[in-house]
Amino acid sequence: MFPGTLSYSVIGRALNKGIWNLNVIDIRSFAKDKHKSVDDRPYGGGPGMIMKADVIGSAVDEVLSKNKNTKLIYMSPSGIKLNQDISGQLTHFSNITILCGRFEGIDRRILDFYDFHEISIGDYILSGGEVACMVLIEACVRLIPGVVNNTQSICDESFTSSYKLEYPQYTRPAKWRGLEVPSVLLSGNHKKINLWKANQSYCITKQRRPELTGTIDGDIYE
Image 1: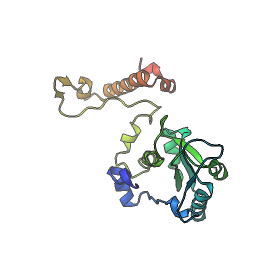
Image 2: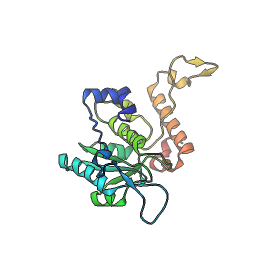
Image 3: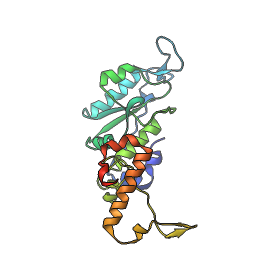
Image 4: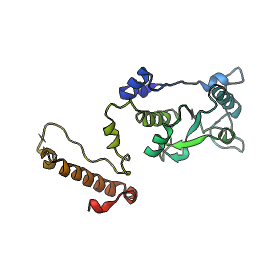
């Protein structure tokens, strides 16, 4: 499954250049029985299967034997919701290990014993943690210097500047199917353009994500 979408665009090019590295570990290779079982029925009953602590533990031990300071993360709908701040904080770690669950999840003792940091990408359920893992990786990698050529584009993105959503973007042609680019963007007056961008960003944030506007000084926009 990996690198999957991570092999494309700026993330893939950065991977090929060695700006970041990806090492995939097959947990099934640490299974204890001849059937290579990685899951079992949950104690106390309930639907589905739970990934086994002894199998995952062996895999984590192998990882820690090579890098004892790796940051341990488990993709879980019960985790802290991923945002731009968390992505930025994670870029300060030189090595990160992301555990992807399957079935009904993993034995809780793994998370407690190794002190995994649980992260969620949203309030919904996926069949496994792999897709969520790719989201987390891309969100972090694109913040690493040298991955995105135009660093200003990162600074202007949604959630990056005071948690505002990004302003609308336009390009050529100036008129398309009766719809025109806002005249201020064609004026060449950068002071007015910047004010328009700030105002649009604030208004969109206030309309769509009002809980974020508390972090913005609205006096300059209203």
